[in-house]
Length: 367
Length: 145
Image (cartoon, rainbow over all chains, first blue to last red; front, side, top):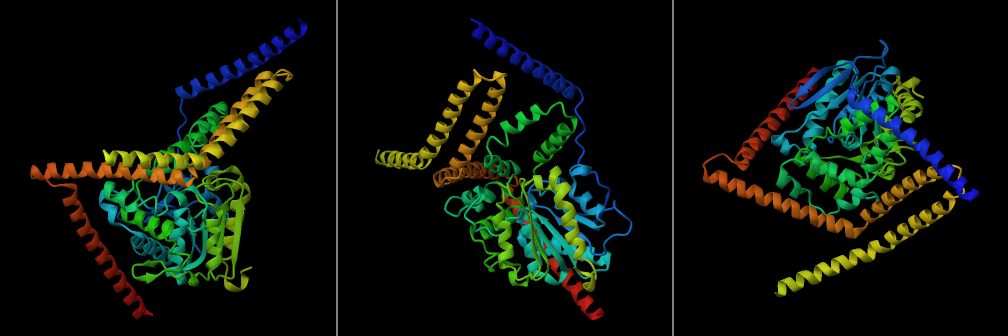
């Protein structure tokens, strides 16, 4: 009888604790509902220095007055908005680079409309990116600048660097799909030629709709991107900072943009299905994107837990590029964690900024 | 009737192929999850706070289920079936677009195809102008050097 009584008192104490926690969380939830924090994003001060069609080139103004002479151009993917690189002041790649004295620019590709369905890889590389690189070089008085590409942006920067190596001083790619023949990763499997024809998407919709793309990304981590994410949020609902971060991330995730039809076909067909770039067979606007011309310093930044772009896909570039200065930096986080995680901003980004700084000095001083 | 028989035979073979590929993974994960459930039920009696174990168990079950789903999604049979599903959906959208085009054409209204033709012409024009400007600038720069 005593044993039974003890067991019941343990259960009732435990239930009391749970009830107290649930009440605290419910109060925090109702307070949050009454006063939803503003999820401001992309708050770093910037000016638009170039506009072309829907694309804007942003120049960031914060940081020390005396800046490194070689500017860094951030090139984000054509999927989702680029403000993930400037999500909140203490979790901002832009701010991390500015603080180290780098002169930072970023391309905002804009939201393609139905009429932009004809824009392909050659347009993004030779018409938009090239205009940005030339404009920055002219403004800074440099012949070449540094590029940092994130996700598909890394594919764009690498292809650009292989076409115009004289205009790229340093090339950094971050969680970028570059070697598509790695045989791992769900996106690589689902987009195989025998299962999927990207032309059909474009024939049906014109551009690849963001809802269609998001559906695929959600399935990469079915419960992690849905139920578990919201359970974690509720678990931390009393922590204001974590709530604000969650709301910013949700804002970014729901702010998807379509991908221009022709580019989508180029990326899936020539990239995911045929892996032309690392095979040195990719042609852009009649010219070959020759990986053997990637002789500039190259930095590959990978996320060890990346389920969107497996690290081996990014590192594949280092195997084919003849550069004598190749560096790898990896961090135990996910694809998005690289740009918004507290750990990467503490440990990784100062090193990345240092890598650019060391390679942007006059030749004799370069370490 | 023969078409129906052929279709059902193929569909049956597809399902059985998929089941063969997926079943061992699913069985392995469910076995692990049931074992955890059993263990947790046993431990709950001796714990100071019995509900703490329930929370851990819930998380373990969800994470395991998620891992199991990822393994299933990584099978070739899932890729083939989802590819077929996407193709079917896109065929449906294209069929609907065709009906809309026909209807608008019958009403003598411009269709999406007509607008696309204009967009393409504008795109080609702006591309040509861009490359002309670039080549003029490049030749100017060369002369200046």
